[in-house]
Image (cartoon, one colour):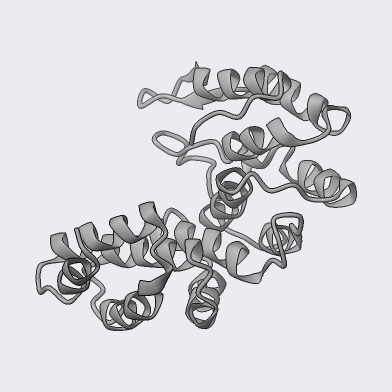
Length: 222
């Protein structure tokens, strides 16, 4: 798609067209369309039915580091709704828009201090998505808070179908000092269990594999 075609689809009445345009902007990081994307989001957010285009628009605004969107992103995050995709992507964008660089994880710690499972997942996903490299003290605090964050109150009783948020943190650990995160990664391997639809524990092989790669300093794909 050309830039003009993307603009046309952003303005389309079909949500599938708008979604396609947004994903193109995200994938190719087309910063020149940040303003148009933001205006499209301000219209989109008025329709509660279009959660998927809204979610992807928020994600794209974070990727493009479009600061004017922060006010709206923070509003969503502060509502702190659990089990909500818009909230997850808003939390990722919150970190991206508020941090000073990929070496600054203070926004992650801010979200972890109060977040629902959706806010937590978004905060930790931002670490993995952008291969963030926080300082030692921030890494230690994140790992401490997240040690058993899979047992968050919002997740207990709803585990089936929900990702273990430690998965994203384990990915981020690939680029961190192993003297800081080896114990966390081994703990995740030892406690890597999901709950099946029959309410039985099953081994979380995805988390185990990610942890093993990170212990070798190799990033896993999201």
